[in-house]
Structure formats: structure tokens, C-alpha cells
Length: 201
Image 1 (cartoon, rainbow, N blue to C red):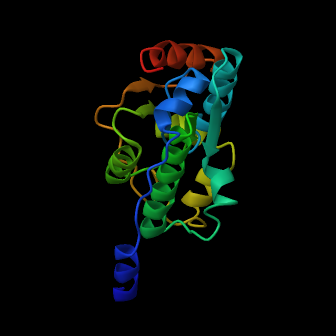
Image 2: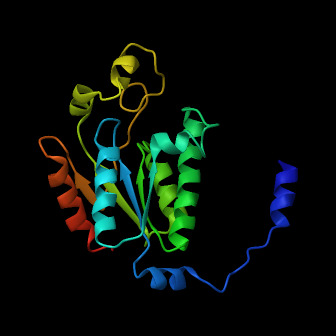
């Protein structure tokens, strides 16, 4: 621990001449991180995929960070304990900030079940760059869909620390955008989110 602290004291931040503002101006857009949170099965990955296509059509430069995809690469060494979930979200936030600094609009799809972690992500990324989108599909609907069979396994005790079942999901207190996908088509959902996003982009 002491060695790590000493190493940090030897680090110096270098400011570059090509700034975030210069990159954003070149790309003709406002870099933001659009942070989708919600239970497993709420529809986050499907929504974020369609939302990126919508933004792409309108000439936006984007990148999607999806929960499973990130855990198969950057965060493959992390499990699902509370400590590992905290680190998972921290790393994602740092990557999102770097991409925003490059002028890119980032869309994320993560359960991110704890408010403190989402607050920390917002602090890392910057409050003016962070747009929280709560996919508020109720657990009953998510479990009915059970696309990946995860709820069934969680109910059987085969998955521990499963958000909404054996681990808490803390709903956002004041999300920038909220939508329940129950009874909505994917096009209706994306239409609504996109219309709300215009004020931020």
C-alpha cells in the first residue's frame, strides 16, 4: 500500500494541446456518456444497440460499452462480489471519460445496481457529460422474459449476488430519463429516449 502511495506521488498529469474541446469541435458534437441502468432483462442492451444506430444515422460518432462485452475483455478478471462490481463500474467510467475526451458519445449498458457507484461514475465522467437513463422495467416483467435464463438460475441458488433477487438493485432517485419497456415496442422506447436526449446532445 505504501509503495503504491509513493508511486502515485511520482506521477504528473500532462496537459495536451489537442484538447477535448478541439476534438469535439472537429467531430461537430457534444461528447456525453449516456448511462443506461436497470435490472437484467429490462432491455438495456437491445435499447442501446438501437439507440446507437439512430445516433449513427444522424452522423454522431459513438461507441457502446456493454456489460457482458466489457466483462469478456477489459474486466474479465472481475467477479460479481460487491467489491468487484464497484471496480467494474469504476473502470467503465474511466474508459467512458477517455472516450468523451476524444470527442465521442459513449452509450453504456450496465445494471450498475448501487447508487454510490453511479454517483462515482458521474463524478469521474463529469456531471455535465453524464446522462443517466433508467430503464425501469419491473422485476416481474424482467423475470417473465428471462432471456438468458438467469432469473431461473438465481431462484435456484445457482447464481449468487444476482441483482433484484439475492443482491439489491437501488433505483435511481432522479434519473435524467426514465422509461418502462413493458408494453412498448423497441422503436417506441428508442423514439422516446432519443427525443429526450436531444436536449443533452
